Length: 561
Image (cartoon, rainbow, N blue to C red; front, side, top):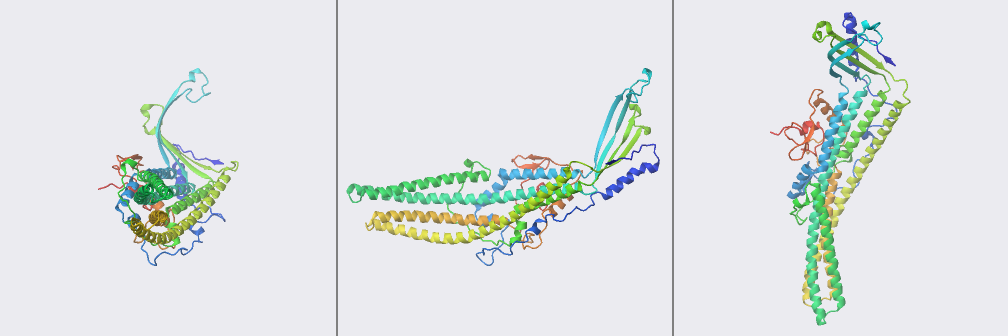
């Protein structure tokens, strides 16, 4: 059903001229002032749905009082080389650059959707020449047949009045999707830092294990050469020599396998920091000087705010809810205002004369009567998607609890494991020293020496591996709790009522955005970093770990002094 009954020209009375303006003002007053259509059984908000969160974790911490993790939490390992690698990764990693570019895409897409709430004004210019002048069929004879040129210039305006909030809900959904991409960027950065630290520790541990293996291999070869001489003199049997040679070849194969693992880990580390393997150097050769930090994991409810993947799921849930409200509002009538004005004349010389001025305003009220059930089906799709993302949010929360419990258990148990295996390594090294002296004096058979050499190699290798597991468990716990926190007044500490996923960021983004501001395009600066054009080359990837509480372009396009 279409209502269109307003068409005003310059020769109408003043009252009729102003009638369309009255209609427009009333429509603007009602625009976007409606509340969402909420039905019984609608999916609740994410934090309300996970009220089953426990108050504490199952696994106790090692100590009663532990410090909170720092914002730059990887610095707690007290490794300058690791700090340098993380800084390089946050600058050069291509996965993070992809995430930054996606943020710029979703921000721009949100602006595209938001623009539909505003009127469109277009400048027009036209020339046409029609024959007959009054239109086909109006010439009674050939003498009345002639062409009639028309010149026109003016403005054309269109505006859909958002009576039921449909356009506003679409904008809210778009900004929530942009926020979700912000949290995706933060999650990529958190994962990148964790993977860089973990792989770095793996490379160093493999270097240390290779060194231990080569040292033991040299000792095994020395014993083997001595056995060969004794076999020649008849002081030892070929069986003793064969056992020693088997141990030698097995140890050689073990060291070769460790070298292969080291090369693969090193190549992965180079990819994480965005460099080629030939340009990357690792100086550390042992894990013994790297500190294992211990931190307070906080409360389970803190995860709702601290984990970027949970916040991303919450923002996606908010977007789906806005899509549902928009689909319901789409059932109601739409109200569109159209206006045009300018100059029109048969002669170009009189185009700007007062008598050539014209305007028209029309208002259209459209209510769908039949569409084959499409709009109702769109509501069903939106509601089902809303429930899907609600369950995905709950699943992300449950997975985060599992990650933290795994991290706490890993930190506790790997510490005990390393303590035991380190003691075994110390005893094995002492045993190796004692057995070497006994062998020199001929007081030990070769079967016993063979077992001692195997024990020493296994104990040292296992202790180094346990140290790597302990460091990896600490990194895993940092990742599980969402990385570091601001030490003062952090909104994600202490549980309680946490801010909604889109509240602060969306409001700040809308306030900073202007309908008339220039929308900068995204390019690449001289360093290969994504940037907004005409910002002096400032990278968009300055604060990848920062929670998106301010608009992205406000945070990352500030000019450097």
